[in-house]
Length: 202
Image (cartoon, rainbow, N blue to C red):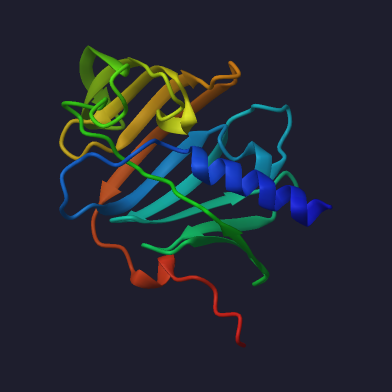
C-alpha cells in the first residue's frame, strides 16, 4: 500500500510541476537551492502543506531533485532526458519507477502564456531581483491547469535571461495552495551521471 501510494503521489507530482517549456533552446543547466511544498506527498512532512528544502539539479530537459522525508531519509527524484519513466531512488540504493513523468522548468519570460490556450491571460507585474537574478513577475489565469505546479492562477517570477521559474504563489483548480522559492541558483555544467536512471541489473 505504501509503495502504491508513493507511486501515485509521484505521478501526480511530476505531471504537475511547471507547465510547458517555452524558453528558447540553448544551454540550460545548473543547481538550485529550493524551498517548496511540492514534495509533501512524497516526504510526508507535517504539518500538511508545509514547505521543505530541496536541491534541484537541471540539465536541458533532465532533472534531479534531492530531498529528505519526515524521518530524515534521503531520496532523489530523477527524470532523465526524453525518458518516459522517472525514478525515485533511496539513499540505500532502492529504486521505484514512476511512468508518465514530466517536469518543465521554464517559460518564455516575455510571453509565458504562449501555447497555453486562447483563454490564457498573463499580466506583467513588477521587475526586480529574485535569488540574486534579474526577474520579471507575471500574474496569470488559465482555463486549464498548465501553470507551474499544474495551477490555474497565481503569480510567478521568471529569470529574465533564462525563463527559469524562480518563485510562484498559485492555486490549483481545487484551490490547493502551491509555492516554490529558489533561494539560490548557480548556472553551469552538471555531470551526466546525476541524471542517469538507476542500473537495476546489478
